[in-house]
Structures are given as structure tokens and as C-alpha cells.
Length: 308
Image 1 (cartoon, rainbow, N blue to C red):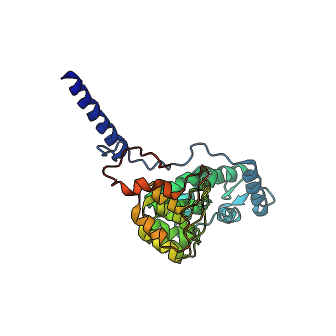
Image 2 (cartoon, one colour; image 1 turned 90 degrees about the vertical axis):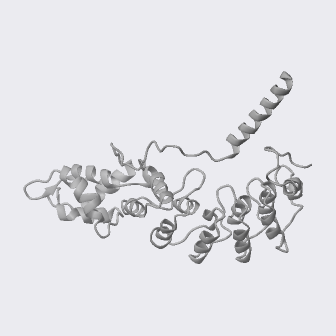
């Protein structure tokens, strides 16, 4: 009797473990609403930035080695910081000019300019992650402000994910529109992460359906892995290659089959030139995943083995 109880309790523990592994946790309490996008407390310029800012100052300085308050905005333009509307007032004048030491003639020296520029300048090396986070949250005004301060929206993290990826993957349509129309002008379709409507917007903006991530994955790979049959159909219609292999030799149909997405496999196989026999780098073919397509997902084991 005790053995039966132990067996039942073990089975219950396995079920409970699978729930923890495969079910999204419920958010019970938000412990912080901080955007995590504060400016650096002690900003520093790189040697290259310091040299550029110094040279820009020398082009505007008077014989006494000082510049007027009016010349400051021109110096920011020289440094390729472009402020529009009320951005200069919000990002420079209000928060920082009060700390600048101006003389009786309303002029400041080189040290004051360099300290001011270091406070305002937001290079992608330090602020790129913040711009990408803002894009993922749909904070378009913050995105524009970082870009105005010199943060290049084209920057990416170590995995090649850009602000465009962050906006697309979190369905931030406004952020996506700002990136495409104002900050980038174009984008890669793989940023859509399998979302059909986002894919359509990117293609309309001139994005290349064959563009790949740092791991060699195209937009079709992502659509296949996510089981987005509608997106896969759209991409194939736009000329996406169903046989494109990523860095591990995985084609879109490999990924669709591996994750058990039968409808997406059907769409991919509808392309006349889709190859089923192409092995990946460890010799696994798309057909080796057939068991995952035949067993319903509700009864499929947590870790199904590949059919040899």
C-alpha cells in the first residue's frame, strides 16, 4: 500500500514539475515599475570623443578661448547631436545649463563645454541597451530623445538583436513606425519573430526577406520555429528561401517539425522546392522529427526523443 502511495506521489511530483517548467508563471506582484533607463551618474568621454569635442570647441572659440551660450547648440550639431522641437530645452537647457559656469559675458571655457557634452551625449556603447529597452516598451519619446543625444538605433546586443527586434517582438507598433520612418529608414524582416502583421510592415518599408541574424536565421526560420503558418505563407510569397540553413544547418522545415508545428510544416511543404532530406550539422533530417508531428501536443512527453 505504501509503495502505491509513493508511486502516486512521485507521479504527482513529476506532473507538478512539468507545470513549473512549461506553464508561464502568474505575476502576483510588481515589485518595481522603474524603467531602468536613468542616465549615468558619472559620465566619461572616450579619448576619441574627447578629441572630437575639443576640436569642435576650437572651431567656435573666441581669441580668449571661450564661447557664448548661443554657440553651444551649434557645438552639439558639430558633434552630430540633432535636437528638434523642445528637445534642446528639455535635454540640455533645463537639466544641465544651470551647472555650467558662465562669466559676466555669458561665455564658458573648454572644461565647462566638455563636462556639459559628457552629460548630454548618449553613445550607443552605453545607452544602446536603454534605447532597445525603450523600444520594447513602446516609449517612443524616450527613443527619440536617446537618438537626438547621439545613440545610434542601429546598434545591437551580443546576439544581434536591435531596437527593431525589441519593438517587433513586443508588438510595439508605434515604436516600430518611429524606428522605420525616423531613426532607421529600413529594417530586417527577421526582427518580426514570426508576427505576420509586423512582417508585412517591414517588407512594405523595404526590408529584405533574406536578411539573417548573427546565427544565420531568416524571418522564415523564426516563423517556422514559432509555428506562425500565416507568416510563413506570407514570407514564401515574398520570395523567402524554404531551404535556407542557419549556423546549425537547420532549415525552416527542420524547426517547424522539431517544435511539432504541423500546419506550418504543411505550408512549407507547399513550396515546390522544399527539401525534406537535407541533414543539419549533426545529421538530423526534418523527417526524423515525424513522431512529434503525429503525437498530439497535449500527450507529447516533456522531452521527446528524436526518431532515428
